[in-house]
Length: 204
Length: 204
DNA sequence: GTAGAAGCGGACCCGGAGTCCGCATTCTAA
DNA sequence: TTAGAATGCGGACTCCGGGTCCGCTTCTAC
Image (tube, rainbow over all chains, first blue to last red; front, side, top):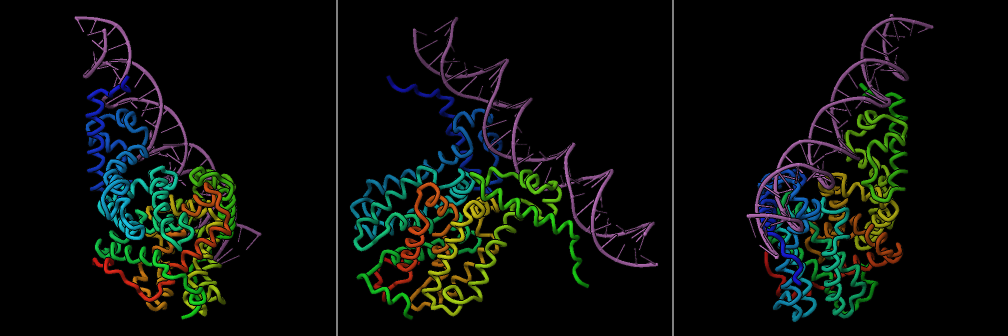
């Protein structure tokens, strides 16, 4: 009845490939430098094996990405505060985005590889859909906050991998500073104190 | 002493290529479908000519992009309100981002091509640098707004081409609605009543 | 042990970016 | 106007990486 377990050499090779790819992406200058042949070679495996296990480049990247992100996803969906559902909405949004940022800081090259070359558009990946709808749901719990759908997109855009890479890598912004800036920014977006008169927008 | 004018066939061909590329990118499903050979053929020109004139794919995209964006850049740098320097900072930020969004809505495929395949990272392109520093400068004129550098990045990220494409193309969000949402979002970021700072913004 | 399913691997194919170089066009000077 | 040089033209060609194919090996169920 069980859906056919995979052969143990297949499982072993799959792990070998994941580990090898992980190492390669962590060390490389730019994700584009790593070819599928490189990964296969580093894993001590043929290209055929690699493609059989992951379909294509995007599939490999996705598998890596999701394996790494899994703990965070769980923590957000069912963990304790400040990430879990019990957290007050505002704090939770800040915490989630901070967790996402930290994740991208820790896995810069990998996430970069996925978001840029992984698929035509990162927005088509279904994991983006998950994060977005989750964030939108939380935003909707904040009164006086309209357009939660767009807001979720915009907030997620602030943690885009290539931006993070640019700031952390090129501009040498220290991680802690970046986290503080993001937190500050998110807080500002969510602040929306008592609906203040729009006249203020032109003043000053 | 004058820096050698280019031959007139060269100039003519350059224009032909730009026009052809423009048309192709406007009509295509995805920018990746358009090959350099396609562009050359459509322009009635050899590949050699194309590469001589624009160096590489990224160069062609950049040339197209900058030609299109030029009017907006001028309007922002030295035009009348609401884009020009005479505008009050808050309104100007909103206007500039709106202009950028409109531009991307009108030139979706082209901008998409540039931002995704154009160069390793859109943040390395020097035109990004220009927009960012311009926006930062305006943000700095708004009192009680800290982190203008990061804020500028985050706001620009909200108008990323692939996000715009996703919303306008996939999700069928009408342009007007998107503009309204962006304007609303930007306004919220800039609103920042007196910093009602929660202690938790700590870190750094 | 044996049959055959599942998996292996690397030679191979395909398509696109970018190069090269003999020929054509344009410019310059007399 | 014309000769010669400089610039530009174009498409065949190279290079390279993603992805496929298929004869062979290894595992597993019986």
